[in-house]
Image (cartoon, rainbow, N blue to C red; front, top):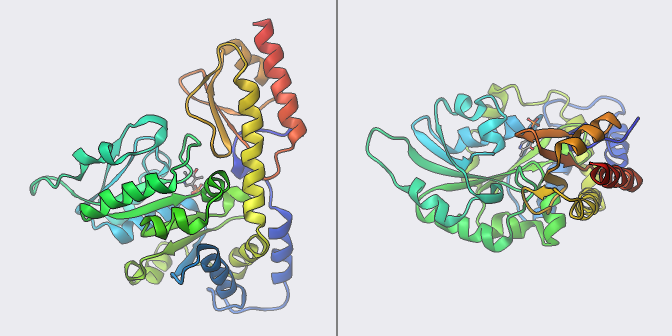
Length: 343
Ligand SMILES: *Cc1c(COP(=O)(O)O)cnc(C)c1O
């Protein structure tokens, strides 16, 4: 099968996660998290973040986002997010649904990154006719493959907190952000002021499952019931939890993310020399977002390469995963160069 670049969630399960899954598959274990693996996985997450926050596992990123936002925003509140954010465009209204009507206030800023200045007009509390801004929702790494630095996050959190908002981070690709910044995970989490965060596993080699972390433990009140109500409390929780112990034990999570990032860098470097190629954003995480000439796109598809064209009819997204082979990137680059030359 031709290696492809559609999405990092198209990749399989990494060996470390699979080994832990197999190890957990012996005998009976009590359900709903009262097994030996779930507390071990939660402890491993806390060690990575150097904190003692409550950690909850859920099946998907959408449920993590929606339930976290519902936890932070009442039905009369508003959540500020980027136009391109997953919570805004890719969740079929789940945050609005689970919060019972909280309104998303979105902003269109460059490279899918919000800034303190861009927030200012949204932080104003209008009269009784408008929802009250209560949460700032950020994505790390962003939907355009960019990354907030610790300083940028600190400034955003400070602006949000000063206005009485809580900060939530959709960290579906948090590992890729850490790998890019080469920082301590805590530096772009609670140390920067983030209150609640999803630490993504699915896109980084886990079979499924995301870890929701309440750095401010007071915000987790009754969250266990909210998770159950939403159908996100896994009966066989050990199989969601165990893979985490596998990838967190020896830093596999970060190695895999660094590999995916490196493959994206390699691809971006080759594309930079292609006449007509225009990057939508700098390549910082594991995706390359670039406008390519139409004949090049058609030629790549003809040769069997798979990727999404999702901004107009020339804006391409190439996602790299934990298992993207370097030689596949080389062959893709060679095809792009050849097609560009012929065009
Ligand atoms: C993939 C993704 C999610 C999670 O999506 P699910 O399909 O619900 O697991 C959340 N946020 C971002 C930015 C994503 O790319």
